[in-house]
Image (cartoon, helix red, strand yellow):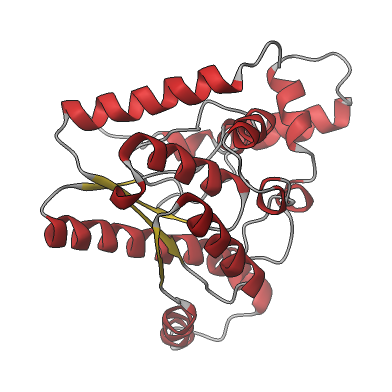
Length: 252
């Protein structure tokens, strides 16, 4: 990352958001607030672009840490946008109860399904609220995505979950660049420097991935100093998840 100008990039993103909203006669934005840096930075960008009165944040706990919700509240208080809370724990448990009627599955067998169900429930909720507030306020609300470039490169997202959104303000910025923009936007340190985690699996992102986001940047920049075993892991994950970006469609 060379000569990164956080102020310039923040202003570019804000202008991009404003232009898109003006061109398409849009009104507001809804986004999940996890209590981490990505959603905090996106919330700051959206509030600066649209005004805090046109941004709705949502906490979506699902067997989650209470700290995540309290950190989300700090973000909403700092930035001045409305924060809703929709607890999905009982929804998740009810869903699981229905699935158990299909068979007696082991914890290991359902582990991946359970992890991915949570962001899918969350995204359904955010889209429900976007439609609801569009009707209530008479203007169209979009769902803002919060994935960064490093996550997207290795496919660290859920199809039909956090991959689904209407506008993506930070998808072309690495984790370090997001942090630099967060510093410029005065995101409080407790949130900005928190170890990235999905709030769902009780592990940090980097624990789950087996490599650091800084190493993903090294790989993308073809850095010769990157450990070869780590490079192989990143390459394997990148290639294994390319299917998430394209739906094979038969054409007559």
